Length: 229
Image 1 (cartoon, rainbow, N blue to C red):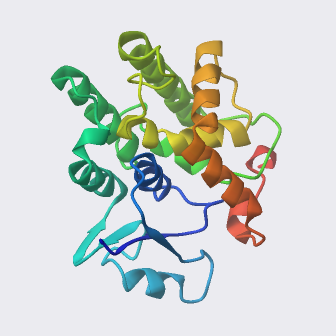
Image 2: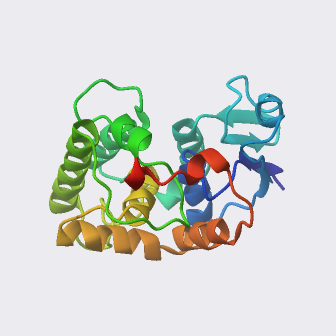
Image 3: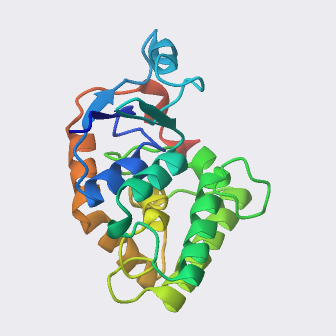
């Protein structure tokens, strides 16, 4: 029996642990959670015990340690190839990997880089605010993401409610954006509203949201209402 632990942070405020957590739930991989809360005096020191980056997520699987969200998702796919966390078709798989890498490239300089959304709209699953006025970079990034989602759904999705019909790592890497759009009431076209609803109804993501909403503590910097600044 494998001894597996996923090191995460607060579900309400977490960005990158969500993707591998969803993949592990999707393949029904047994694992324990080690939660390190943000905003503690020793938060970084605790995280450094698990990875040299001092960040989460980190996967501990027997004697193997894997950090970085996309690398963990890839590792899970290698452990459970029959679960097809990437599309089976070579071309579709390439497109899914391209998109997942784009979502992962928060430091990217291209116009639609997701970093502009991440920096403007903090992760806060349980918060609801009035529709937010966005800066030009964030607006451009949201438009880029919506266009990418629409193109992928038109080309490869449409049956199972996900970007490539069935849930893949591409969807896992999109989940934190879906949560942000719900939190900040971002105006979306109907087809993308449907995609976001399908994602939020996906049982693993619905479980994450429930558990995030049940956390009874706050991280003060993430509680600033960006609609008022």
